[in-house]
Image 1: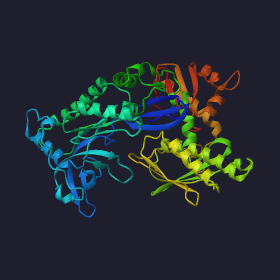
Image 2: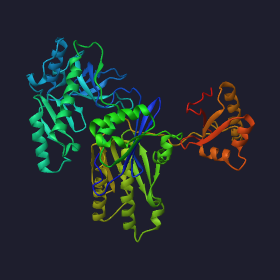
Image 3: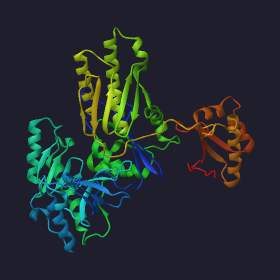
Image 4: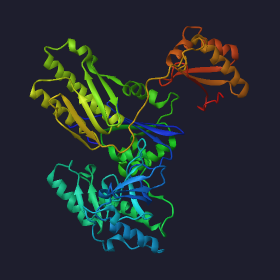
Length: 526
């Protein structure tokens, strides 16, 4: 990630861990800009390298369907095979035949490149084992998207087996630094390995880059050395790092203030990884131990509720309406109450559009919206204002790690953006089913909720030995229970001879509640 060109941005990473998933929130100046949810033990993530089996050749598509173990076959187009496919496949075949140590790649003679205008049936056959890499995770009804031009990403470098080319990130603008890095990598890399130098490598010394290059090469060659015979079933050859460390690898920078984790084991993993890539930043990793959920404490839950709906309000009473279709995303900009202010319509439209651009850039990152995005800005007549809006959107999108392309406003006032889609869009349903009637149209009187809580507590007391409990519930219910000098919660404590504390949880719906013991373990109410 590239920081804002014009000011320093304070970044915090908040990591919430539970049995099912790890949620990672990136805050910039306390504003939520990215949200990632990683299922525990997830498979088929972008970057994973598999040994797959060719299931079906599709000459009409010039592509093949590959079985990598997912419920739906993965898609591999001819253009994604890579020019060095024959070399990669030949090296794999030698690895399966040689039970001893395989030949070092630096000593391996490359095969001729495949024809860029060739046919997939001339290269692949049904039942063939191929080395493939996930480039797009399964989305909706589609299986993963694959490539055979594999790459292994590190903090500073990306290793490209059999490529033999060295390229430097275009975001490193200094010509002398670009030449230094290119010559440095060319001098230390073995034959038959290509390298992409990432932006964060700017200013790094040869020792650090050499150590990382050797580590990436070792990962690749170790993975292949474990293949002694052709596989009968697809299997993972080399897995990408988990989502947490992947995000840290890609976005960790000097302007990070803190990385706060509510699980000691995950915090230890994060510390260990940061110790390898940026030892000076190890001290920013902290363990969160308060009773209140970490996302509630740092205001993430509240922001999620306000940022993932259909209507998004922003500065001055203006708002966005975001609609999703199978083919594209549509964003409508509305001035709202702002239409009543401003010296004239044109200046007001420009002001609203510039503020909308900031929120839209944030929403694209936050929801990880990919594909085609069409934005209907408020009409402006001035060409200068239209150009200013276009320049502003490009500036705001420069911080986006996903590949994207932005077109100027059309004559109808529409802006078109294409944004790389590699995993399913982040969707969170903020419209809750009526907590009172549960969608049935009828419900027991809400005033009886406290009676239900008390009955549940009495039932728990009979099952467990402890008399100290924590009740988590909606903020409105918590306020009602704690209201007054002789509150309802104090009367419950006196009546049952227990110590019951109440904690407000912003993410709970109105009638939701949970009981915990004082060690933080949820008490099963079933």
